Amino acid sequence: MILYEYPFNERIRTYLRIEHLFRRLKELVARDHPLDHHYALSTIFEVMDVGARADLKSDLLKDLEKQRQTLHSYRGNPAISERALDAITAQVDHCYTDLGNVQGKTGHALTENDWLMSIRSRVGIPGGTCEFDLPAYYAWQQQHGDVRRADLHRWASTLAPMAEAVILLLKMQRESGAAQKVIATAGQFQQNLPQGKTFQLLRLSLDPNLGIVPEISGNRLMVSIRFMRQEADNRLHATSDDCAFELTLCS
Image 1 (cartoon, one colour):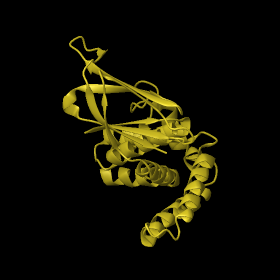
Image 2 (tube, rainbow, N blue to C red):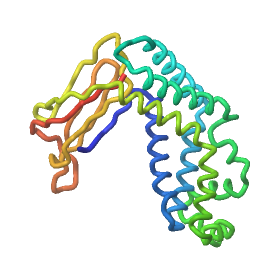
Image 3 (tube, rainbow, N blue to C red):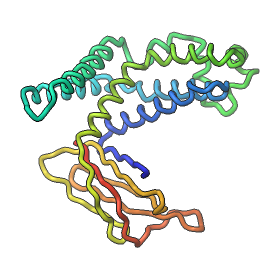
Image 4 (cartoon, one colour):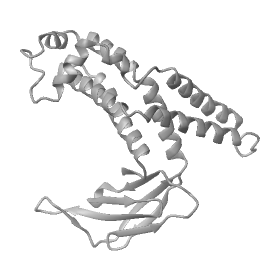
């Protein structure tokens, strides 16, 4: 199954982008080739760009506090395991404390590294990190993969509190929804969202053998999905076939 996710607000959109970047970073750092580590470093710079939003840290802390209050309300409920509740509460508390201890914006400590910032200033220029432009960076790329990996881990560790908070919040968000099997008649699906309940994230699971792609739009009142198929002209065209998929709405 192919899983698509659609955020209903800008805050969740930012969280998903950060999660995407950290997944890429983890994959690239584990490899040994200098080119992989170049793109790992570029990914760190991308995380810094996304994390530079002034309200990101406060949004994360507010969401963690909201989750703490929700978990506290479950105390004494016989249907909920106290051990499991203690474990997830400890994770939320850990993320809240670590993030709260971070000084300044995400990646601020890295901005004080002149060598890294010289690379960052040129990484967006086509071919701007060639050896004749940044000989010190080229020399770093010639070092053993383990040496480069240790450096990348050290630099990425300054971003870890934000990453851990985002990953935990998205995990809890996803677990709040229940999947339902639905059919898009003639490739079209619309659903009014219940009043009085705010959804944050839509998840759509689709059989890849169907060869279709969803175009999703939505707001607090309604969600609309149109299924497209790539034809011989390499363009996407709306399909008129009935399409079965799984839909999950996470609040």
